[in-house]
Length: 72
Image (cartoon, rainbow, N blue to C red; front, side):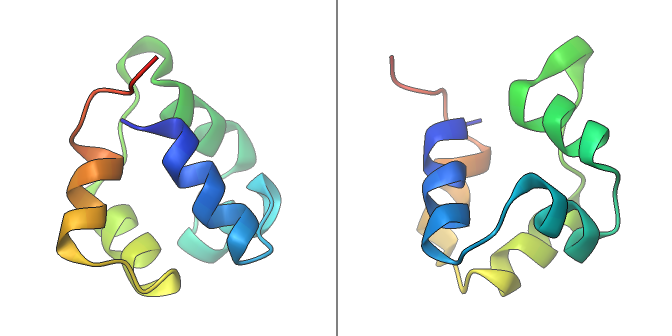
């Protein structure tokens, strides 16, 4: 999970944790846990698809955000 890349997309589209969580149908706490990978929390396929559509992400961007290790 590349948290920085997701957060940059959120900022680009004017989203906060609250607005993105509401848009994909989860709580702010769940979104935070998934972004931080707390206790193994991960985005579901449906949530990833909703984020992809919301931010018009390419398949490569989806891979970079959700399936890559974050670069320190």
